[in-house]
Image (cartoon, rainbow, N blue to C red; front, side, top):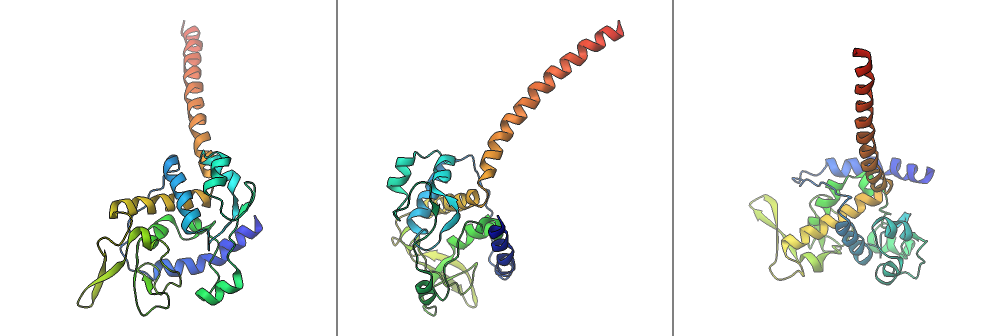
Length: 239
């Protein structure tokens, strides 16, 4: 817990600066932890496109599979590619020192990214990579300018470019036929991936919401019996 707190406190100033320095019109994001198909697809996308560089060092495969209703054998077959066991933490095999040389810095762990930056930031960040030949990796980002990360979702989204009208380059457009998904399908995929990171930021929130439903039902039933009992007592007093 102490390590998590230190990570969050160190990351907050950087996150706040990055979010506040962007003038990109952010699209709203409303997470849904009751949507298990969305969370399951988000887990699949994360395992296939993100885990190569970004670990989730405070999250376990077993806990994640159980929370999202995924059988262990299915999770091991389709979502664990590092030779780890179902009870292991979701760490990455990316070599830290080499990654510093490749990207200018080691890719950060993303367990707490939704808590630090917010889901709206993640959702818009993942959608706004665009071609920029002046950058070392050939891409830039509207939410996080001069980002040092490649566009790992390029094959799904397609080649996205700035559309400029004079000095105004506030629009983005995808080259037709360059992505595996349509614009609507890609938006849905990014929603699912962001929703998964929303869950990872506080896994207990999912169980707390489930428990809250039963607590409310119990209180409603208890309140009904209490009301009826109170009415019976007052009958005797009034007569």
